[in-house]
Image (cartoon, rainbow, N blue to C red; front, side, top):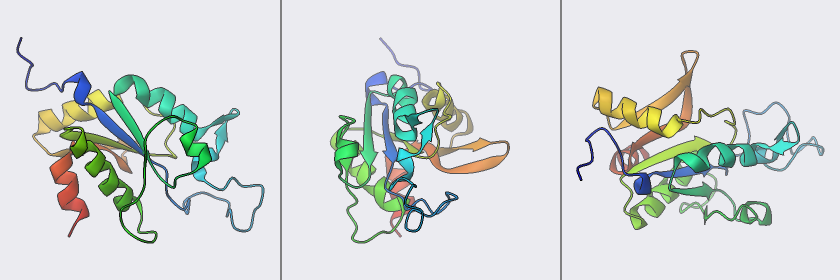
Length: 168
């Protein structure tokens, strides 16, 4: 059996949800608004946490899914692997992405989909769409956009290319 060059084996579809951010783009400030959840992935849409929505939408698209964020009981309850940042302090989503790349390397993954935890309205064919864009345009990475606006870190790319972007 031959696998076409524009497809990726289902068992090699790896994705990570970046859930370790400080939530600076959110409207409320969790340090002063005590009704605000401690983490943006705990925000709710129709009583469902953002993280649960994203997991529900990504899980059928990938063979393995992990979370990058602080080790906590709430994240552990998902049953997914939790990837801690390898760099000290808070250095942003690239630190989470580096942890995801190490995780992908351990699994032989050459392609990684990253997804911010505040992007619940994911297409049900996101992985395939981004991977097909990479193949069609002969690029090492495809970044999602909505209404011509780029969505940072909602992307699918070759792990060695991600690493080159993340490590100066």
